[in-house]
Image 1 (cartoon, rainbow, N blue to C red):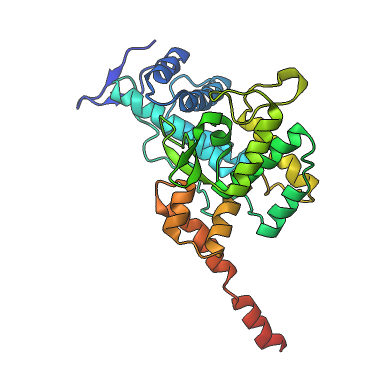
Image 2: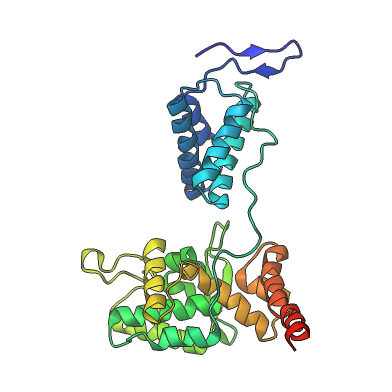
Length: 312
C-alpha cells in the first residue's frame, strides 16, 4: 500500500490504495444484523469489481459519480440507492480511520418515488384468491393459512418465515401472533389473529400431524426439503403462484401486495391512520401516510368533472 498523504492542515488526501483488505476490514467493522452486513458486503463487492474492471486503485469523486451513472443505466432507483449507500458508508469509515478522504460525501444516489411499486388487491379479489385454493391437500391448507394471515395482519414474508407455532398465544380474549419485526431483536410485536384465520392455521397444523411449539409455523412439503422452515423466497413464490392461479398475473402483484392490501382495506373501512400504522408496525407514521395519499388521489374525481364539462 502507498503511504497516507496528508495536507498541511492535517486532512487526508487520496494517497492510499483502495484494496480488498480494506473492504474486508470495513465489513468486519459494521455493527448490524447479519442480514444487513451481508447486504452491505455484497454491495461493496460490486463497487470493488467496478474499480478493478476500470483499473482504479485510488478513486476520486468523479469515479464515484461515474459508478453511480453506470448503475442508473441498468438498475432500478432503489438498487442504485442501496449500492451508493454502501459506498458512502465505506468512505465515511475510511476517513474516520484516517486512511482515505471521504470522496463520496454529499453524493446522492437515485431519487426514489414515494409511490408504492406494488399494487394492492381489493377485498373481493382476495376472496377469489383464497376460494381458488384447494384445501383438500396439505399444501393447500398451508397456502390458504399463509395468505389469510399475511393479508389480515399485514405481515412481511420475513415475519411469516420466522414464525414458530408457540408464537401464537392467547392475549386477553383473542389469539395473537408475536412476530420478530423489522429492526427488532426479539418477537415482541403483536399481530391479532382473526377467528377465521386461526381456524385456517389450526386446520393446517392438525393436518400436519405431530408438532412441537418450537417448530416453524409454516414448513415446506416438497419432497426434497419436507418439514423444513419455509424461506422468504418460497413464501413469495407460493403467494405469487396463488395470485396467478386466480387470474392476477402482473409484475406489480407480489407477496408484498398483501401488505399493501391490508393497509388499503383497513383505511377504506374506517380505520384511522394511527390504527393502520400500528397494524403495519411502521416506526414513522409518514410511511403509513403514503397509503392515505394514494386513497385521497383515488377519490379525487377531477378528471371526470373536466370530461363532463367538455363532453357533456
